[in-house]
Image (tube, rainbow, N blue to C red; front, top):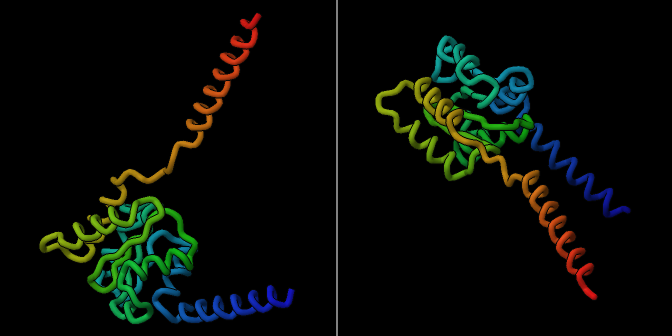
Length: 181
């Protein structure tokens, strides 16, 4: 019992440290708070103007979510834009996909698209020739929206097939038993 309480205390302290690291004074913390109410988070220190960012709620809809962040956000966490996207998604409890622009660098996190495929989409959008940062974000958003999502195995159909197979096996067994003299 004491060990369990000690572990809970340690977890609480670690969690409190993480929360303080990304509080409302940080760009990550502000994005986390914003996603509680909107699908697009905009930081005025971003390289994208508020006018450019203002059209993204209509472009992205509810998925993917989009965050425009200043380059200084990269100093808040190691790992680049993808790690920042992952951290925001984790802290905000997001579902679906998150696209971030950190300075001029694109990143993304998704629970619907495989990691390798998402990296390909980010790379292709990052390489858009002569595109403004907002145009590259829009390219990535549209690519994400066009991507089929991983829905996992069709468990409902698998269960039906198993039930039908089991029923057929029972019928066959019953017939075999009745035919015996």
